[in-house]
Image (cartoon, helix red, strand yellow):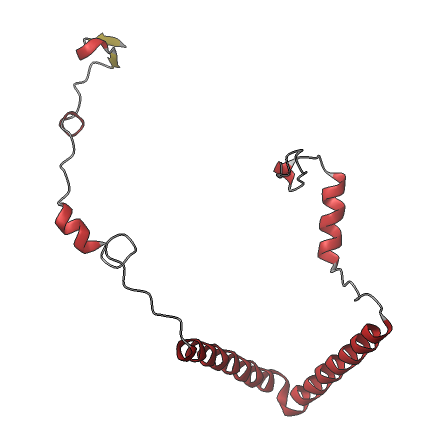
Length: 153
């Protein structure tokens, strides 16, 4: 490597090749007006005004979401009929309805008796708990501790 003379007391090292012309000249300044037009509406320049939250806008949004949910359920039902046939799909629906009814009634009876709600731990959650309890401590492994000032380390 050769040491080239550098302006203002800086040392520049290179392998004997002159600096490319693109690196020597500063980049051209962007046209700010053109840039402002390109980003219009993306949250950077003059964002559109927010719609006021009224009862009718909330109702429209709720009906739209309800329509999406019903449409998805209809699509899934059609898929069930295609995969299992009419009898299989109806059997699955009756079994699901029975499970929902049994779970609801047992939950209500437990609530009346004052029983705490049952905790359902999935096998994946149990495996994650075991892995974290056996692993090294520290926030890098997902385990945190409270600091004396009340924050989380």
